Length: 328
Image (cartoon, rainbow, N blue to C red):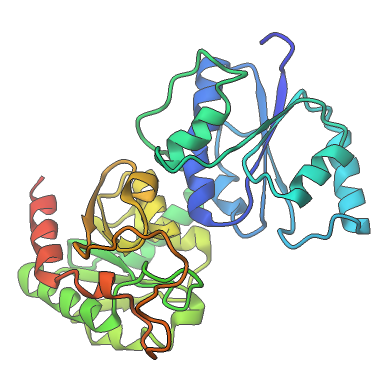
């Protein structure tokens, strides 16, 4: 271990994947505190990591980069000047491997997907060949900028509690079987309000804003869909009493922020992407679950946008879980 003093971790792509990778460097830093850790990710995800005390530097990369472009050559030169002893490649595409080759980083650990374990554990296991003594952290942790949390407190002050976040985004995602029908969100939100008369915080992607407009019919709801930056949205989530969401980045962010979380699952395997900590998973009982397919065979040529596995999750089932969860 004495010969490894500085490492680079690479993960671009989905927000949830980056959140799931945090346990890897958290574990390394805990058992080998003198090692300097840099992290390479997209500009979108950078704000989630910029305040992390376990990371010395965040390097951004355009996920759509071309391997033989001037941009790649310049980025490779930047990496060369850092003199890394090791790169942990959690995004082992051909392009990223090529970038590492051009950067003259001699030692590389490559992530291999294993659907038999949770993604958090899978990322963590990647480092074991070089860091055999490290132990896996039991919970995810995110560190948000203090100023973002203060702004969120101002946004949410004087609102009736409990504050319950609903993340209904990702409706038009390429991966089907992750999103709950908007009419059921409205039904669920109003049932929660009948019980608690608190405040529903609506969260979602900007591209879904129009299709999610019926959510405004939820009593005493605050609509932040497409209105906040990623870090500001995370800060709002951090102050909520509960998050309810399909398998998504915001669900895993909530878990990492120690916010009680309820995940609604259809096509996605819970043992792989379920709530890692501070959460409960509600799984569809449809026989084909989890199929882990991008496209649902039942939606083909149907004109529908919600997979049957998500349609069948009953709002009363979710409500009863909310009640049980908020008792504790």
